[in-house]
Image (cartoon, rainbow, N blue to C red; front, side, top):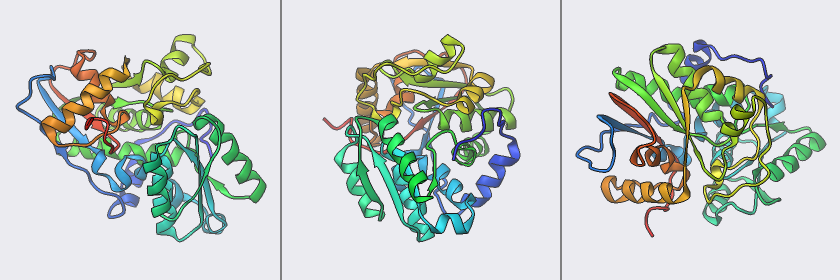
Length: 316
């Protein structure tokens, strides 16, 4: 399902999700990587969602969304489309609930993600070049077989689940002044920004997109939803061609700034995370750190960069 365009999250949405997720997903740690040379931030902390179950923050939103479904609807099966990480989260949630799960992927999905989806018991269908085409096929199947569809970023329960990581970070580091968050379709940035601002209004939130997939940046610049004509990034989990109204609305209200990073900058950051912190992150997982290393974020005070998801982009 998708959230209505006018939906506005409340702090209670995130607190309810946090209670629902307790003991089901991991409360991931904040890592202080000091001493460090490359990152120009006074007090950098890394929120290690790469250590989340299935390797990414997506498990938070997926579990919350599936747990919110009517049991009778859920029993018929659930379906989604993904760049890989959301699919893994939904597969995990479906496995826990004991219901059949189908995940549609684009041909740009790494084989390792497909193997992990199979491990969690999902049926995998590869269709289309990227997420947008895979999503059309997922919606068609959901309508045809009357299955529950879990949107990766425009679902209210998904957004609420993703935002729980901000509540954790603020509880663990009350002096946080800035969140730096990767952006794909906008589910994570919507949740983190709203949860952070509703619980701590003075916190800044900076989003990070690939130069080759400036999905939210383009819509903000145009003052309306736009569909990118093409995608040109290897960070496939950050590459939908279009966001949705609810995400654009949350970004407009709660996000202070969006910056762009290149694939080369994400690769360099992934290598830094591996060699300096022993963290294996995919390109998307290193996007927030890349923005800091490249000096694209003015972040005085304590900064939280989200690292998600797990991968091996820095090992080559």
